[in-house]
Length: 258
Image 1 (cartoon, rainbow, N blue to C red):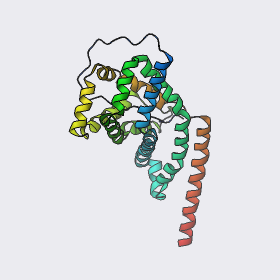
Image 2 (image 1 turned 180 degrees about the vertical axis):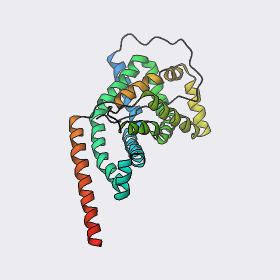
Image 3 (image 1 turned 90 degrees about the vertical axis):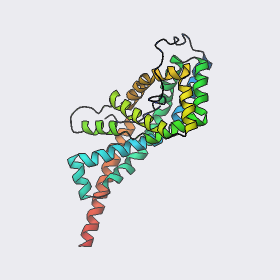
Image 4 (image 1 turned 45 degrees about the horizontal axis):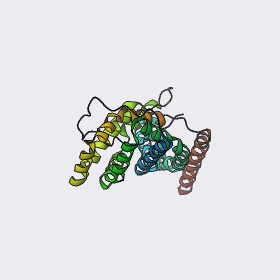
């Protein structure tokens, strides 16, 4: 089974900036070790600022809320055993957090390769300076805070009733990010909003805007990455054990109360 593990960089510059010019400088043909290292550090900065663990937690909560309110079997289970949704979250959370730590170095490398392939060393420095600034950090916190993964949760839960393998589409990734970006920019202070808009109008800011869809595609591919065999085994074992133990405990309580 595939599961949504990460939704990395939000559409940081979407919705509030003017369209980018059609012509852009070609990406650098060669990349020095320093260039690659700077791109990797930028990827780590962005991913850490976007609170990847918090996003995985939100994805789990969103999928659980959607599944336990729409799937007839899960709705019935929740009605019969209140608290079962929390049990699912409490059991899944440590498994997915361990999986996140396992895959994060490779994800950082993929995002770093994206930056290295599309931005010069100087442009990477400009992006890093912006995302380290008060306005850049405020933007990432605000956008991340508004990510609710409603579209992706609905899409995945809708697929659970069929025989197809779970798969997140680019449309749902884009929808969730755009909605969060619009809300995130709206909640900034006037000074922060102006600083974000100013950066968005620079050549580097405009270039980043044109590459949002390409970055979203990277995130979509990683969202559909297979779980490690260890995580799949833990899910089968630990979810099943937790469910059986919870139901048995509830039944003992009910029997004792009679």
